[in-house]
Image (cartoon, rainbow, N blue to C red; front, side, top):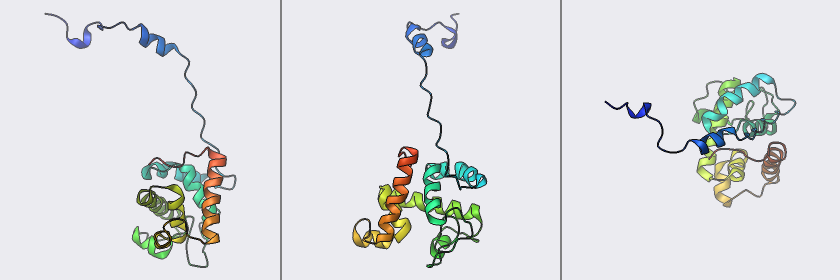
Length: 171
């Protein structure tokens, strides 16, 4: 009998496919270099876990740079802790047993940032909520009128778009 379909020659002319295959490919841009003071082990871990939360690794690193300057033992005056500066209630929300553990802190911070991105559908609002809390973003219907929060949003988005071209997250 006749050969199965997978073994028969194509019905159409393969020339356009061959021509497309021979065209030179545009090289993808290499990923941007991480912040100079970011420890390589932290960068590597963020590169591994950020995609799990549909976040660009460099967005997570930009937040981390602003939050703790990559200090896993950082504590804010409001008691935010670790690399991603988790508030105790946020750490509890994401079942963090040790906010000083970089892996737990990064995972919870990235997970929280993804949650805020989904909730607000806007990077600036998500960052404002990360910094000032969801209640304040809701109360003011946008970025709260706090100098610290406005500066935070501007610095994180500005640093990222300036250094990394602006593709911050995959919604």
